[in-house]
Image (cartoon, rainbow, N blue to C red):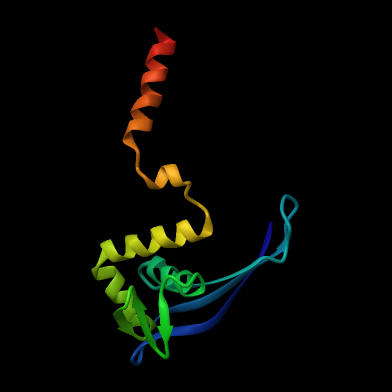
Length: 134
């Protein structure tokens, strides 16, 4: 796999640079289709910003609404500007978890029976293993 990693911009909090906006493009890949591309934020001292990704994926999946520079979720404004919205999600992990679950549900990454959180199914699976070993 050959990756083309480029810095496409600086992330600033007022005057201070706090990270980089990065674009990664798959140039050569022998096991999957090449030329896929992704953009994400790398924050100094933190790494890839998960909350920034939640905002980006939430906006593209219509989970998080964006009007001008305001981000809102379920009618509640969560921040003016991307940095303030990211900070809000860091301070409120329960709302971040709700947004992540909604994004995964919209993308079809979670099956309906898994969303129910059925511990009964897990217990039933464990019971089947115990019965099989007996």
